[in-house]
Image 1 (cartoon, rainbow, N blue to C red):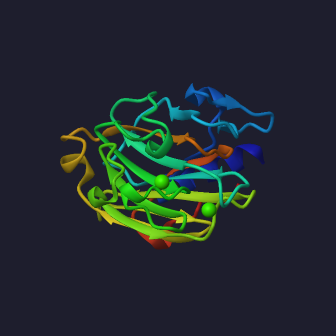
Image 2 (image 1 turned 60 degrees about the vertical axis):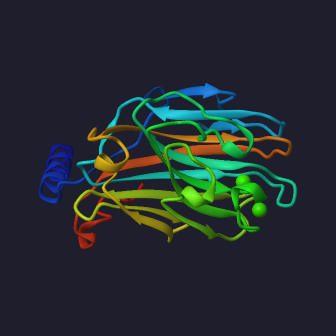
Length: 240
Ligand SMILES: [Ca+2]
Ligand SMILES: [Ca+2]
């Protein structure tokens, strides 16, 4: 019975060219102020000024393959006075944290693509008043450099976990971010050629930072899936 189940699973994987995995803690490196919490998540910053942290998946992913990365994030409980946010990052060099404060641990990392969730208004960076998302290139956090966005989102410093899904399709060259099941921002770009100088192998990670104001920032890894290109087939292995 068990053998049959395993065989069926393997067959399903082969037929659908899809594979998903749950990571273990050892699959990640951590830097800065990050530590592992009792519930198996990573606390990137405490409610403390001028903190920063990041986690990085040890193995690179290939941008020649379609995949999705699913995470749960927590951006603190302070709406009015909470800062600064989190960034999901692809980069050629892993295990680094960029500038803290308004840099959200992403500023200065290059070559890179970052999808930010920004919770603090920095007027000189042309931040929207609302919490917002943007897709940024090469560690540049001023919105005049954005690859996509900025786009406002509902307050995310609500003391609750939120589901994130980052999806990449090499066929359509489309990178997207879903927040709680809704797509909130997307970009169509040849990332391998235009950002990573022809290198398709990139590391992914999540950074967070605080500055003169702070909040808790926490991330839990849910799954990494290599998916078929056709949307109709997606979701085969999305059940936990
Ligand atoms: Ca907010
Ligand atoms: Ca900001």
